[in-house]
Length: 435
Image 1 (cartoon, one colour):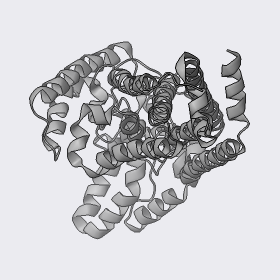
Image 2 (cartoon, rainbow, N blue to C red):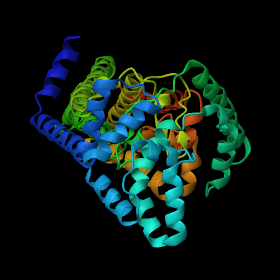
Image 3 (tube, one colour):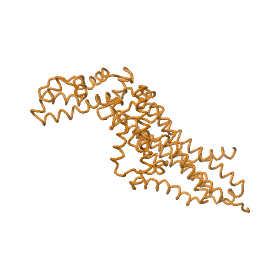
Image 4 (cartoon, one colour):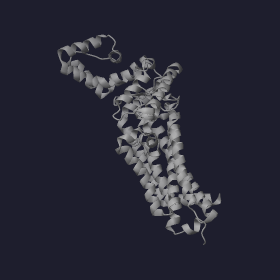
């Protein structure tokens, strides 16, 4: 244990590691601020409404929410001016709800009359009306009893440019069958309660949250950056021994193997610690900026995406999903840290080890992004790199493998086994040598 702790302290004394970590956190904060700036005042309005009215709301609450927009929002003023020019003197939140739900009303009749007389004016009105209608429609389209999961799954598989056939297709169809059962559970358990935030710039209430995990989002960036830090840590610990020409002294016989094992353990510990610290700091900042404390216990099934309601394959809240994402990210970082350490031990060379360590993730990244057929491969899409590229899509049906039970866990275990074999081969290469 003494060697382990000394090695951990040695890793933490690296100035370059601290500089890189601080810069990484600065960029993560930048991504959070950019996301918040793009949402602006509208999402802050949702937070205030949630504080006053709660996260669960019905049609009367949506009407109250839209009334606030109609009172003072600039887009509402443009809409009112266009309606007045067309002969409609006022518009209410109830008018918007009736139009969104295709109910008969005086306002709907007036719009149809405008359409018959001046199609251009009608198009301008509808364009400005659409964001308000979309909030109302999105908040109310929660009936999963009429949502055919199997039908949507078959359409998804047929619409893909790359066909999925054979046992993979059957496996995915079975996943959709399981998802259909989850849809019934969501309806029975009342998991899909309504909640904010909505804004005029979003067509649903999921992307304010999932974008934080995407590959170019704040926590996605922390995930990718932690993989880079794992490489830096492995280079400082194992790589520095080779740079100092100590491989013949340190790694000979059983004592050398034990020392290399302790160095590998320290690399894993420090890589995981860096990821957890950066993730928790970024999460704390996201909670502060996006008021996640208001929605932490809300079921994830409340979220809406373009294709319809979100149907996560297991019951989970927004807070629970956050920890799920963090766990997948931690496992991915540790697997890559073990890969970097194993390659260093196997090659017994700083330069060759560094080149291979960088080359393997870049190769995976290039294949997934540039070879379309790779997106149908379980092994590639379940790799740490493949999971990172889809980090904002876990439990969402636009990531094809998200419907498979325990997909992330099973694939990470397989990759951990593969990388573990590589590291074991490195230790087997050690020979008892004379000093």
